[in-house]
Every structure is written in C-alpha cells, then in structure tokens.
Amino acid sequence: MIIIAFGYWLDFLNLAHLKRHGSIIPHEFTGQIDKALLSKTRDYTVETTKFGILSSVFNNAVFLVFILVLLNIYNTWIASLNVSFILTGLVFFLVMTYAETVISIPFSLYSTFKIENKYGFNTMTAKLWIADTLKSLFISTILLGLLISAGLFIVQKSHDWWWLWVWSFFLAFSIFMMYISPYVIEPLFHKFTPIEDEKLEAGVRDLMNKVGIRVSRVFTMDASKRTKHTNAYFTGIGKVKRIVLYDTLIEKMDYDEIMSILAHEAGHWKKKHILKSIIITEAIALVVIYVAFHLMQSNVLLEIFHIETESFFAKLIILGFIGSIVSFPLSPLFNWYSRKNEKVADIYSYELTGNKESMISALVKLSKDNLSNLHPHPLYALFHYSHPPVLERIRNIRNYKV
Image 1 (cartoon, one colour):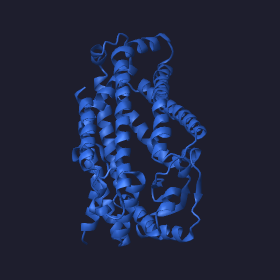
Image 2 (cartoon, rainbow, N blue to C red):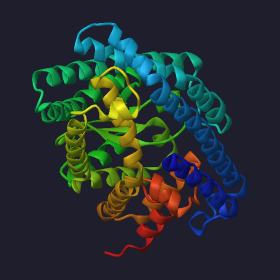
Image 3 (cartoon, helix red, strand yellow):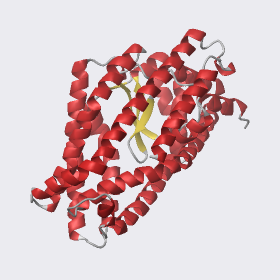
Image 4 (cartoon, rainbow, N blue to C red):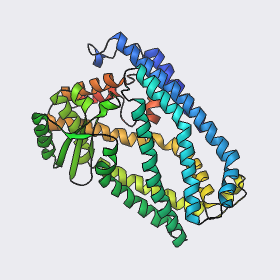
C-alpha cells in the first residue's frame, strides 16, 4: 500500500508543479507555442493524469480484492475441474486475461473517444476500435496459449531445472517474435506502403548506409486512421531493418527533421543500445525466475495469502504481485539508463547529420503535436520518464560541442 500511495503522491506532485509552472513558455519554445496551446497542453496533461489515477485506483482495488479474497475461491474452482496440469494452467491464466480485458474496456473507450477526441488526437471509428480489440484478443489468446503450454510442459518434464529452460524458451520466443512481428502481426492492424517521396527514400537509405544499416524497405504506416500522434521506428533484427514512418510524421515534419529523427534511431542501433537492453533485461529475468523457482518450492506464499488448495499457478500470481511492488523502487535506475541512452542517441543524430537545429525543431514539433508536458516535476520524471524531458534534450543538443 505504501508503494501504491507513493505512486499517487508522485502524480499529484507533478500536477501541483504543472499548476505553478504550466503557464510559463520556455525560452526554447518562444515563437513556437502561444498561451492558448500551452493552456491546452496543461489541460491535456491534467485530464490524462487524473483519469490515469482513477483507472489505476479502480484496477488496483479490483486486483487487491482478487488476490486477497477471490484468489482462493478461483484457485479452488480451477482445481475442481480435475484436468491436466497444462490445461489447468491454460484455463487459469486465459480466464484471468479475458476478465482483465473486459474490465479495461470502459476505460479504453473513455480514453479513446472522450479524452483523445476532446484534444483532437483520435481518428478511430467505433467499428475500427471493436475490430482492433477483437484481433488483439485473438492474437493474445494464441500467443499466450503457446507460451503457457510450452512453459508448463517444460515445468512438467524438468522439475529441478525448469527455471533455466523456461527462461531460455521465452528468450528464444521473444527473438522469434522480433523476426515475424513486422510481417505477420503488425500488418493485421496497419497498412504499410512504400513511401512515394523518392528524395526522402533515397535520403533515408544514404543515412542508414553511413552507419552500416542495410534497409530492406522504407514504409509509411496509416497511423492517421487511428490517431494524429506522430512517430517513427525501426523493425526487424540483425543488420536488415525495416524503417516505418507514421503518415502523420511525414505530413508534419520536413525532410531535415525526419532525417534527424531517423539518425537518432540509428544512434540506438550503432551504439548497441537495444542489444545491451535485451542483455540486461534477460539477465534480470534469469535472476528473477531463479529466485521464483526457489520461493515456489514451499507453500509459504499460499499460507500467507490463505490459499487452501496447493497450486503452482496461484504461487505465480502471488509472486507477480510481490514482484510489481519490489520493482517499483528500481524504476529510477532503469529510467536513468534509458535516458542516458536517449541522450547519446540525440548527440549521435547531430554528429551524423551535422544539423542541431533540425533535431531541435523536430523535438519542438513532437512536443507541440503530442501536447507533451513541458514542465514535469524532476522526481516524477525520475520514476516515470524513459526519455529526458524535452527541454533537457534540447539544451543538451544545443550545448553539445564536438
């Protein structure tokens, strides 16, 4: 409860900081943003934060009731089905997944069709929202079903070493998904077409050749069917990449700004940030699953939470609950590492393009177009920002000297 209360305190601290400073136009945005847009940005941050608190309070309350009161009942019912170990696990986790999806629907609808509509971001129709939700549920059922079945099969076959083999399988599966997701899953939700601007495509290829990235294709994605937010990203693994630009990004950014954004992404690849992050994440995951393996050898967790029927699956849920509490205080460390990499990628963008102003103007546009909070409280940013606040990024780029 202390961790949860601290998280909400950070939210209110950030809102109070915004109330004091939110009407100030930063020097870096002089001439780029007016009082009306700044007020809209502040209102958007306040509304999304308050809604986030409301949904979080509800979800936390539901989960606490479930784990403290209903888990024993649910676990006993699942055990009474008297089916195989793997099938029991599938029912146990898939039913929970479906329940979570149903509970989240009202919040998703309000966020999409009320808040995002109000601030001019949402372009999604109700029909498209329903289609996306059903497709997501279908895909998650298949993938989760495969992971659960394979993971529990390993647990059955290797009682003493399943922690290592499950970790290895999940690692292999995640790498496999990096390969197939751009070609199998992403096209189920978005239409990808080769960019028509020949100058832009040639510029992207030349830029990537400078850092040794072989680009298979450069695509534009029909993001405008769902949102007016802007973005660009790399997909694929290894030396061959696909570059995807939101159609909203191409519409709002000029040539040099797009090059600066892509040079930033190339910086992550050149500096091996993604590879290092995967290694760190998987190393932590290995330690976590090893500790979980030993904790699950006894029934102490079941006794603490008054679970009457012994259950491998109930232990996993309890460990997940404890893990979420333990990991929250570590979030500043992980965010610090991420922000450090973002700063390096920003500088690399300038070194690659030789153009500070385009990266700065791109950051200004991204902040304006996405109504990003220009005045986050430093402590809130410490716990929640994986990227440096935009003013810090702009100042770092502007003050950088070769």
